Length: 628
Image (cartoon, rainbow, N blue to C red; front, side, top):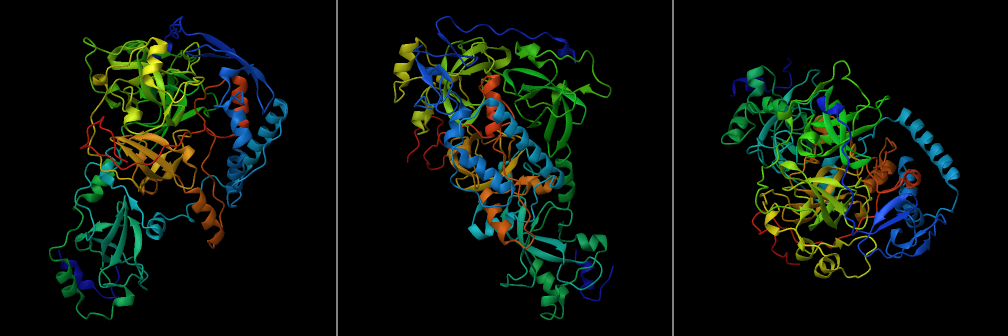
C-alpha cells in the first residue's frame, strides 16, 4: 500500500396503445349541482349561486365559482395579479441581477389584448436573454460556503435510494482518508496528496490535507464521487506521485513514516468505489423510447411521449405530437406519472389517441420491466368505492392537502381522485393515484397531525368539520385500513438541506430544506422563496436528491433567490442569476381564457402555510397525533 510513497518530494515528476381511441369519462353523479362560469364548469356540494364582479378584470360571474375566501376575483390569475405582483417584480429583478423587491404596485385593469401584447413582449425579452445566458451560472453559489456559513446540515446520501450510490454509500463518513490532487504545489504536473474528510454534506465533503493538523487555511470542498477522488493506495497502484503541500513540506523530513503513522487503522474509500459510482449512474432509459405519461393539460388522461434526453435518471419527455419538440415534460424514470405503452388500456385509464399513425423511425416502446413497480393489492374484499371521501395532496397545488373524492375505481389498485369544489364537470382534472400512494390519506389525517386541510372551494361552513360534511353530502369516508401505513426509517430530519425538483416547474431543481416531517411526508421549502411555494413530498420521492447531485450529473441547480442576489453584488464576477421560474408549465384548473391570463401573470398557485412541528420518523404509528 505504501510502495508509492517513496516519491514524497516536491522534485517528483510524473405503440399499440397510440392507436386507441380516447375513452369517455363517466359523467359526474347527478346529485352534484353544476355551475358554469367564464366558460368553465364547476360543481359544488351546496349548489348555492350568486353573482359577483371581479375586482381585477371586472368580469361578472357566479359568486361560488370565484376565487379566494372573499370571492373578490374570478380566477387564480386575477387574485395573484391584484395581491402578489411583488413576485413578478421580484423575478424580473433577479433576472437583472438585482435584489428582489418586497412590494410592487397593483397592475391596472386592462383588456386581454393588452395583456397578451405585454406577455408577448415579456417572452421576447426572455428569449433574448436566453441567447446570451443559456444556463444559470453557479460560480456565485457554493454549497460548501452555504453549508459552512450557516452551519446547515445536509441530508445524507443514504436517504435517497434512487440517487447514485444511494444504496451502497457504505461507511463513508468523517475521518475517512482519500487521495486528492494537491493544489498547493509548484510542479508542472498533476500530483496528489492524502486528505481527511472533516464534514459531509450529501455527495460533498470538506477535506483537509494530512499534515495541516488544526490549520484550516487550505480546507476545501469537493464532490466525493468526482473523478479526481480516490481511495488511499490508488497512487501507489497507478504510479502517481504523492507530494506534500508546499505550505507544510518543511514540517517533516520523512513523509513516508508520517503517512504510515497517520494512516494505520484509518478508513478509506472501497477500492471499487469509482466503479460503483459509474455503475450507479447507468440508466436503462434511452432516447427515442416511447412511454405513456400524464397529459399535463388534462390530468385525467395519458398520452404518448418520447424520451428526448436522460440526465441523472431524469427524463425529458416530448409529447409525440409535438412538431417542434418543445411540448415537453420532465420527470424521473421512477416517477408514478410514466408507464409502459398499453398501461392505460390495461387498467381502464383514459388515454389521448395520437394523431401519429405509426411510430417514427428509430422510436420504440420502452420495455415494461423498466418502470417502477407498485405494490399488488387485493380488490376482491373491502375496497375503495366511487363517492368515498378522503384527503389528498392537490397535484395542482402541492402545498395543500384537500378534501377529495374517489371518482372512479380502475384495475390494479388505481383510483381516479377529484378535489372537492373545483372539479370540471367532465372530470378532466381528475388525477390518478394508486391505492398505496403516499399522497392520499384517510379522513382526519390532517387534523390528527396538525396540518391545515383545504376545504372544498365554495364551502362556507368554516371551520371545516368532516362529520358535518359527510352528513351534508351523504357520503362515507374511505376505510382507514385501505391506506398505506408503511413508514420507512428514512433518516430525514427537520432543517436538512437537499436539492429538490420544483414540481410546479419540473425542469427546475432548487436548493431546498426539509421544514416539516409527518411520518413519511416531508414539507419541502425552496430557500430564498416564500413559504407559499412549499410542497408536500413523500420521503421516497424520486424528485428529491442529495446535496451535490446536480454537480455530479451535470444538471443545472437553481441557487437560493436571496443568496444569489447577495452574492451577485459581492462576487468579483457579478453574473446575473436566472431566478426559479414561478410560471407553472403543467396543469391548471382554468378555462382557455383564464389560462392565457395565467401566462401573463407568470406566477404560481397561492399555497396555504402550515405550522411547524417536531419531526416524526418510521418508529411512530402512522395515525398517532404529533405533539407540538
